[in-house]
Image: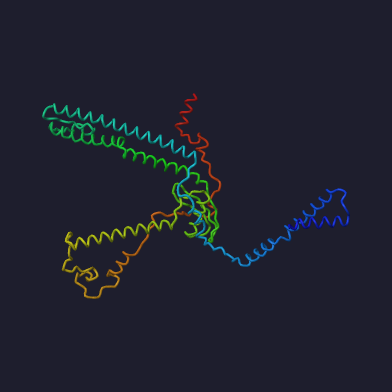
Length: 404
């Protein structure tokens, strides 16, 4: 039997024993309902065994839970993980994408028109040269061509035979026909046409990137480094960062400030990750080294098989170095040469085998002076605001004449 039913029976017996039969039965049910409601509240909040288990488990977990200490990040490693999660490609706005499409169509159409004009001009010149060849073939044996290109030498005349003139024009005709075929192939051949399209796409992309980065001209950040405060801004014209600081800031701290700038203004492609560049340089060095070793092995095998002759042997007569000759006399010096003058072959081989990594790209930082040298207020270009300020004296006189 359920404990709630037992309680109802006990309460009903107690009520009949003390108060007799109830006049209104619903009062009994009302009191029973009230009693059961209070009982449920007390059971759920206090007497329920699960509360004891949860509390015990919480205390146990808190006692056994290890204290995790966050790793201390060096200042020169700040923002490194953040920029590596960023996209390395430029993200253009919808307006910039429309500008890119419009400029591509316009530039590509202009390029095609120029190519067509060159083809037409080339064909006209070919027809003129062909007419000249026919004309000179039907002319006399001897010809005198006056040099009309140079005004100072108008009296100079060059007499050529008919065959020489025709041969000269034939060479010029062949050259023009070849040039015309090249222009035609650029438009008619699929590979050449795709190459023209790709070149225009690249130039258009570079133009939109420059327009996209112009917004950084007025974007700057301030950062407190271990060596002092730094104000950093990106110079688009020089493609480098320029900074202001009252103290000398090492390059490794400037890299951190550059990462913050890139993260703040979402311009990841302008920043060069040095670790990635070193990996690229290392892979390139290993590939070149492997290629040299393979070429060396092939030469050794060819030399053994007799396919390649050995290198020229050294002369048996010794040629003494300058340190072996006495100054002014030219006689051989029998003394011991200085240690630093003789090249160490082992040292040379060691230097050749050492891995020297050169970064092809790197971030540039230009010091512009102290913090007080930076002007937060941008100077207004009056030539842009007031067109009359950019007017020349000739334009002014022309405007005065138009008024009269």
